[in-house]
Image (cartoon, rainbow, N blue to C red):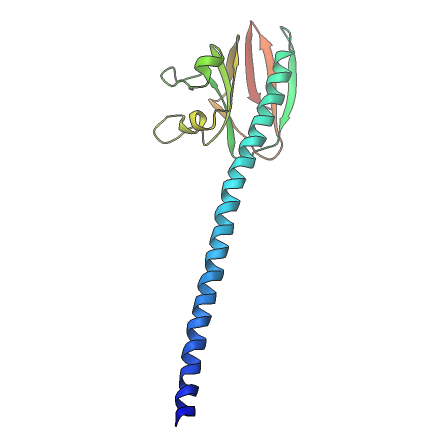
Length: 161
Protein backbone atom coordinates (compact mmCIF):
# COMPACT_ATOMS: atom_id res chain seq x y z
CA UNK A 1 0.00 0.00 0.00
CA UNK A 2 2.74 2.44 0.82
CA UNK A 3 4.19 2.02 -2.68
CA UNK A 4 0.91 3.05 -4.29
CA UNK A 5 0.79 6.27 -2.19
CA UNK A 6 4.35 7.08 -3.21
CA UNK A 7 3.49 6.51 -6.88
CA UNK A 8 0.46 8.79 -6.54
CA UNK A 9 2.58 11.61 -5.09
CA UNK A 10 5.22 11.40 -7.83
CA UNK A 11 3.03 12.94 -10.58
CA UNK A 12 1.91 15.74 -8.23
CA UNK A 13 5.53 16.66 -7.36
CA UNK A 14 6.54 16.40 -11.00
CA UNK A 15 3.70 18.71 -12.02
CA UNK A 16 4.59 21.34 -9.40
CA UNK A 17 8.28 21.20 -10.35
CA UNK A 18 7.36 21.56 -14.04
CA UNK A 19 5.17 24.59 -13.29
CA UNK A 20 7.95 26.17 -11.20
CA UNK A 21 10.48 25.65 -14.02
CA UNK A 22 8.10 27.16 -16.59
CA UNK A 23 7.52 30.20 -14.36
CA UNK A 24 11.28 30.69 -13.89
CA UNK A 25 11.91 30.39 -17.65
CA UNK A 26 9.07 32.85 -18.34
CA UNK A 27 10.51 35.37 -15.87
CA UNK A 28 13.94 34.98 -17.45
CA UNK A 29 12.56 35.81 -20.92
CA UNK A 30 10.62 38.76 -19.52
CA UNK A 31 13.77 40.18 -17.94
CA UNK A 32 15.73 39.72 -21.18
CA UNK A 33 13.00 41.54 -23.15
CA UNK A 34 12.98 44.43 -20.68
CA UNK A 35 16.76 44.75 -20.82
CA UNK A 36 16.69 44.75 -24.62
CA UNK A 37 14.06 47.48 -24.71
CA UNK A 38 16.10 49.72 -22.40
CA UNK A 39 19.33 49.16 -24.32
CA UNK A 40 17.49 49.72 -27.62
CA UNK A 41 16.32 53.15 -26.44
CA UNK A 42 19.84 54.01 -25.34
CA UNK A 43 21.26 52.88 -28.69
CA UNK A 44 18.70 54.94 -30.59
CA UNK A 45 19.56 58.01 -28.54
CA UNK A 46 23.27 57.49 -29.17
CA UNK A 47 22.61 57.15 -32.91
CA UNK A 48 20.50 60.32 -32.83
CA UNK A 49 23.28 62.21 -31.03
CA UNK A 50 25.82 60.99 -33.58
CA UNK A 51 23.57 62.04 -36.48
CA UNK A 52 22.96 65.46 -34.90
CA UNK A 53 26.70 65.96 -34.39
CA UNK A 54 27.37 65.12 -38.05
CA UNK A 55 24.60 67.43 -39.22
CA UNK A 56 25.66 70.36 -37.05
CA UNK A 57 29.31 69.93 -38.07
CA UNK A 58 28.34 70.07 -41.75
CA UNK A 59 26.13 73.11 -41.12
CA UNK A 60 28.82 74.96 -39.17
CA UNK A 61 31.17 74.73 -42.17
CA UNK A 62 28.63 76.23 -44.58
CA UNK A 63 29.01 79.71 -46.04
CA UNK A 64 26.29 82.03 -47.32
CA UNK A 65 24.73 80.53 -50.48
CA UNK A 66 25.99 76.98 -49.83
CA UNK A 67 23.71 73.97 -50.38
CA UNK A 68 24.58 70.52 -49.03
CA UNK A 69 22.93 67.12 -49.36
CA UNK A 70 23.20 65.01 -46.24
CA UNK A 71 22.06 61.44 -45.58
CA UNK A 72 20.50 60.79 -42.17
CA UNK A 73 20.00 57.05 -41.72
CA UNK A 74 19.13 56.52 -38.11
CA UNK A 75 17.33 56.25 -35.84
CA UNK A 76 14.28 55.52 -37.95
CA UNK A 77 10.95 57.10 -37.00
CA UNK A 78 12.69 59.91 -35.10
CA UNK A 79 12.23 63.51 -36.26
CA UNK A 80 14.35 66.51 -37.08
CA UNK A 81 12.80 69.67 -35.61
CA UNK A 82 13.94 73.25 -34.99
CA UNK A 83 13.14 76.01 -32.56
CA UNK A 84 11.71 78.46 -33.22
CA UNK A 85 9.88 77.07 -36.19
CA UNK A 86 6.12 77.25 -36.12
CA UNK A 87 5.25 77.08 -32.45
CA UNK A 88 6.77 79.97 -30.52
CA UNK A 89 5.18 78.79 -27.27
CA UNK A 90 7.27 75.62 -27.05
CA UNK A 91 10.91 75.94 -26.09
CA UNK A 92 13.29 73.03 -25.74
CA UNK A 93 14.94 73.23 -22.33
CA UNK A 94 18.37 72.46 -23.73
CA UNK A 95 18.08 75.32 -26.23
CA UNK A 96 17.80 77.85 -23.43
CA UNK A 97 21.49 77.36 -22.68
CA UNK A 98 22.72 76.46 -26.18
CA UNK A 99 21.61 79.46 -28.18
CA UNK A 100 18.75 81.42 -29.60
CA UNK A 101 18.05 78.92 -32.40
CA UNK A 102 18.04 75.19 -31.92
CA UNK A 103 18.06 71.99 -34.01
CA UNK A 104 16.96 68.68 -32.44
CA UNK A 105 16.58 65.03 -33.40
CA UNK A 106 13.89 63.52 -31.16
CA UNK A 107 11.69 60.46 -30.93
CA UNK A 108 8.01 61.25 -31.51
CA UNK A 109 8.70 64.97 -31.41
CA UNK A 110 5.12 66.05 -32.05
CA UNK A 111 2.70 64.59 -29.53
CA UNK A 112 -1.08 64.83 -29.52
CA UNK A 113 -0.84 67.66 -27.00
CA UNK A 114 1.46 69.58 -29.31
CA UNK A 115 4.31 69.47 -26.84
CA UNK A 116 7.86 68.37 -27.44
CA UNK A 117 8.17 66.24 -24.31
CA UNK A 118 10.61 63.72 -25.81
CA UNK A 119 12.91 66.46 -27.08
CA UNK A 120 13.18 67.81 -23.55
CA UNK A 121 13.68 64.33 -22.04
CA UNK A 122 16.30 63.18 -24.56
CA UNK A 123 18.25 66.47 -24.58
CA UNK A 124 19.48 65.91 -28.12
CA UNK A 125 19.58 69.49 -29.40
CA UNK A 126 22.26 71.83 -30.72
CA UNK A 127 22.22 75.61 -30.48
CA UNK A 128 22.97 77.94 -33.39
CA UNK A 129 23.51 81.65 -33.82
CA UNK A 130 21.55 81.62 -37.09
CA UNK A 131 17.90 80.97 -37.73
CA UNK A 132 16.92 77.39 -38.65
CA UNK A 133 13.80 76.50 -40.60
CA UNK A 134 12.77 72.87 -41.05
CA UNK A 135 10.41 72.80 -44.02
CA UNK A 136 7.14 71.09 -43.16
CA UNK A 137 7.52 71.52 -39.37
CA UNK A 138 9.58 68.34 -38.96
CA UNK A 139 11.32 65.70 -41.05
CA UNK A 140 10.66 62.07 -40.10
CA UNK A 141 13.78 59.94 -40.46
CA UNK A 142 13.37 56.84 -42.62
CA UNK A 143 16.06 54.46 -43.77
CA UNK A 144 18.60 56.71 -45.50
CA UNK A 145 16.67 59.97 -45.44
CA UNK A 146 18.25 62.49 -47.78
CA UNK A 147 17.98 66.09 -46.68
CA UNK A 148 19.10 69.32 -48.31
CA UNK A 149 20.54 72.06 -46.13
CA UNK A 150 20.96 75.54 -47.55
CA UNK A 151 22.23 78.77 -46.01
CA UNK A 152 20.63 81.86 -47.45
CA UNK A 153 20.14 85.31 -45.89
CA UNK A 154 21.78 84.10 -42.68
CA UNK A 155 19.12 81.35 -42.28
CA UNK A 156 19.46 77.59 -42.59
CA UNK A 157 16.71 75.82 -44.50
CA UNK A 158 16.47 72.08 -43.98
CA UNK A 159 14.17 70.08 -46.25
CA UNK A 160 13.69 66.53 -47.46
CA UNK A 161 15.16 65.87 -50.90
